[in-house]
Image (cartoon, rainbow, N blue to C red; front, top):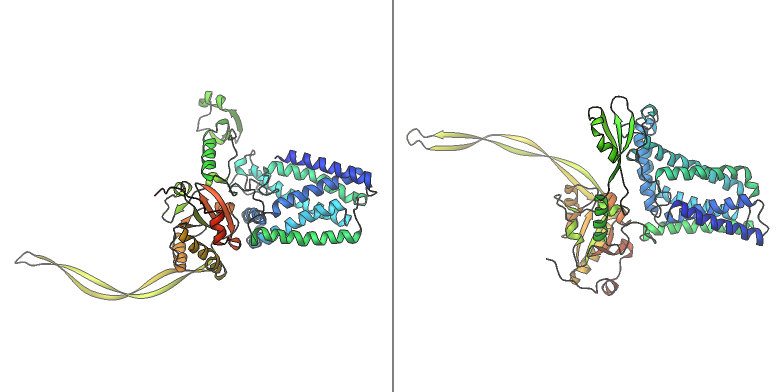
Length: 502
């Protein structure tokens, strides 16, 4: 689905709603305003719902924005605000739930016409916020990586590779929009936002005031609980990510790698080193006239390539390594037997350094030659005692996180051993030293691997979470609070056999 087809569907729905309201009720005061109410309201409801099924995805996107805002603020006149964004990032999940619920509620209020003046202002304010956000994202395409956003004199021609955030997250993982499309969408939506400010008296209103209040209250409560359920108590009820249950990761990764390899360079974007002039040439034209663009005068600013035959997803980045850095991706994806992966994108622990002093003996070695026999002898003798400082890093689990592992994850793994189902841990965002120390404290004997934390967050939201793999396919994923009973596990997921590969 594209944003255009989505808007067409919503426009047809809104037109039908407006027609029915006009024909069967007396609520329509202005047909055009009512259509805009229904269209903008249904768009906000849809946009909010596809994010409500996965609030953590929106939270990760907010963290990405906060990181970029911090970097931009540090190098500009807004440097005094730079410390604010890391603080906001700590509350990204709560902010995510708030914004998702607010967006859906505004959509509902628009469609039922509740509190027209307040709703108009809320819609206008949130659209201004969205437009600034997507505008910033799009405009960073004109800002080279080494240049601050506010250094307007150093902006260059637009390059997609310059953009700090490549997807605004307007529709979560359901529909990914490029920043320019998102920005244009929001600019268009600013038109009804302004119209509503002056035409709120022409809003249609449905039901009685008390019923509208009840709808608003129960919607807020229900949406809040629904959002919480999709990360606190379970995995997202609908999974729009590439690592959904049933995905053949091995086959999909091979297809994506082939599609990436088959991509061809269509155009070359060149930059004159002296004047800063940009030229875009077709590949054939550039190759025929390459001598006219010597490297001493011109540099390649960008290679404009054809689109891959299939969309490239995070599956292409799926890579697992052991603690020594050796890759084990192929071993995991080609294993025909059932294997349990404990997915741990971000370990929760603290660390500190302990300094101790020990006494170290200093010895002197002398070589002695017997003049008669010519024998050589090394004589060791004590010289002095010196104090030596030793530093040792101490890692300690967060107690709540440790309790999740000891109460849910480890007992589940232990129960599967009698079925010859082996497990392995994959962690992100921690050093080899930290991982070794932390898992030794738990007495874990299973293999410990590492992977990119963003990849692990994409695979599943529960931290930690359980994934059942077989033949490179994701058979099932479980939130740590929703692990199945062993009888159900054996009946539904382990009643299967395959020849061993070892």
